[in-house]
Image 1 (cartoon, rainbow, N blue to C red):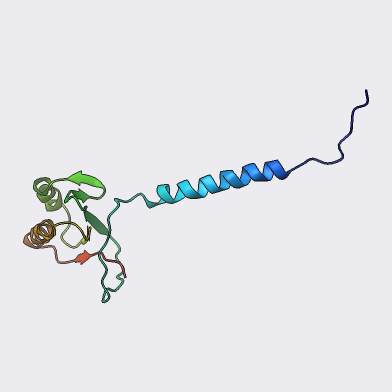
Image 2 (tube, rainbow, N blue to C red):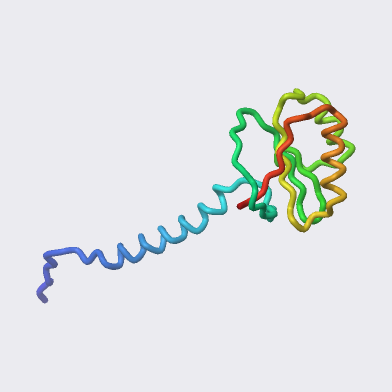
Length: 125
């Protein structure tokens, strides 16, 4: 019995495996990269971009749950947490377009009552 000698390596199956792995990495990396609370921002045609050095984000999800910097909180706890924040810090309110306006207004009123003047509402264009 004579053994057949191969002069080259077949790399097509290797390339197929690499392409599948690349597709998996690209699909999962988009979920990992966001790292924010998923909300659907309302649109505003007159919005403008602003440059902020130091900011704190408040998120209101569609089920009216409130998050301060990615940690779930309540309005009562939010009152205590913002009382220790510097009043010159920019506050970004990220409210889902399906959230109740009542929750948004109560947070805005809470910030105004605590003398925050640098408040921005995050929208998409």
